[in-house]
Structure formats: C-alpha cells, structure tokens
Amino acid sequence: MNIQPNDKIIDLGAGTGRNACMMANYLSTKGEFVGLDISSEMVTQFERKCASLPNAKIVNQRIDEPLPYENEFDKVFISFVLHGFPQDVRRKIIRNAFKVLKKGGNFSSWITTNFL
Image (cartoon, rainbow, N blue to C red; front, side, top):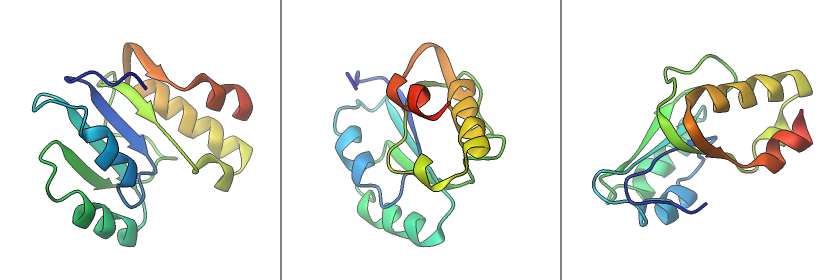
C-alpha cells in the first residue's frame, strides 16, 4: 500500500483490527487509521487488539450507508468484505470509498474492476 508516515487510512469492514495493527506501525503520530465495522463483537476485538496504538480507532458504522467523511483519507482499504454483499450494495460501498478519498488518494483498483 506504500503507507507514508502521515497517511490517514480508512478500513471499510475492519474486523478484529489485525490489519490496523500492521498498518498503524507504518504511521507517525500525525498519521491515523480509522476502521469501520458494523459488528459490535468485531469492534470489541479491534479495541482490545489495538489498545496500544494511539493512532488507530474503530467506529461502529455500516459501510453501505452514507459515511460521515468526505475527501479525508489518503488510502482506503477493504478486504474480505465485498463478497458478502449483493452487486448493487457493492457499488454503494465502492462509491463511499471514493467519496472519502482525498484527490489523488489510493484505493486498490482490482476491487473496483472486479465488482463494478
């Protein structure tokens, strides 16, 4: 993902925080990792796993509804999530991903190509 120290990263469907722990290690104190997940169990696991990471947080939020962010993130990460949604919902999630990205931000193109 070519993570830079000051990047602001969002993970749509962050789950247990496994990816957050890995990515947050590349961030400086100015960088930030925000995970979104609908499952209260995943939020609890994320909080427990990432408790020592001051630049990582989780928000209990559906990713297929409008998000409270716009043009704020340098990178969007999504993994093992889209397959669980119908095609029309996948499109909403991908639109949300691009909405939260800053101009020139990074979102894996294989996801958009395979699911649109």
